[in-house]
Image 1 (tube, rainbow over the protein chains, first blue to last red):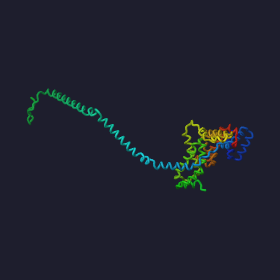
Image 2: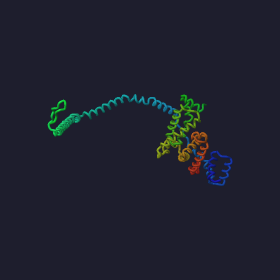
Image 3: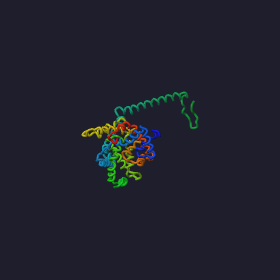
Image 4: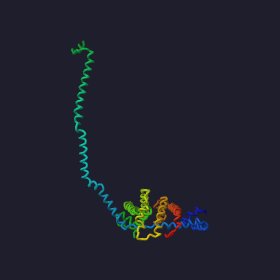
Length: 166
Length: 190
């Protein structure tokens, strides 16, 4: 049997999980193979070597600490959101009122601040009025000029449609 | 003496005393399992608290389908793995441990054996750390917690044959990794 195959059998041998026939195979092999014999010794040592990592002794208050933690968690869950709300409601109201006053103040200042009324209402109205007067005047002038080609207007119509332009 | 399952069923019915009894039975094992899994002594108790907290919280939904300890160690494994994955890579684990480690007590004369044990512990941790997750868990549960292959198969949710394969492969790798230390021998069963 090859050394490579025998290694797994060696590990199983050390684990106590090996058939009698396999055990004989391993014994025979390691008698004639120094490397596998060495591997067998290492395999036997390994499990005990892992004991070099000793256990630690946890604190005796472990259980008490656990229940303290549970109580703290339960308190937190019980008071959670409502507790926060209760504690912060007055502060929240004051903050809200201040924020509202601030926002309203900012709007008022922006709309009615110094010079805003003149700029927004009076001067615009005045300009609009001038524009409208000029437009009206221009329209009248243009209309008069267009109608002039028809000559003076005769207003002497009767109810039957007689009369009119000369 | 009541079984773990009976105590867990009492916990499910609101008996906190039963859960205290369960913790007293298992906390040392869980703390040490996490300690060996993470190599962080300072955190192992906190993480063990987290494990029991999860168990306690899920007591309402507990069904005695599997052995309590396999369920407990499955949670402990998950908590340890989550902790290791979130750990900064460059953190020196051994130095954190050193401040409170077993050689901290300067009243005791530091002997060669203690130094050897400490060094060996570091080599073992590194060797175990280098194994694939399932091989590491299988070996740790078998070696340190005395679990049978069947119990490990419940924790890892795989067949008994797969657990044996994990253990054998893991042992073979550990022999290769720790070869020089195994050749040196020592006073701890070596």
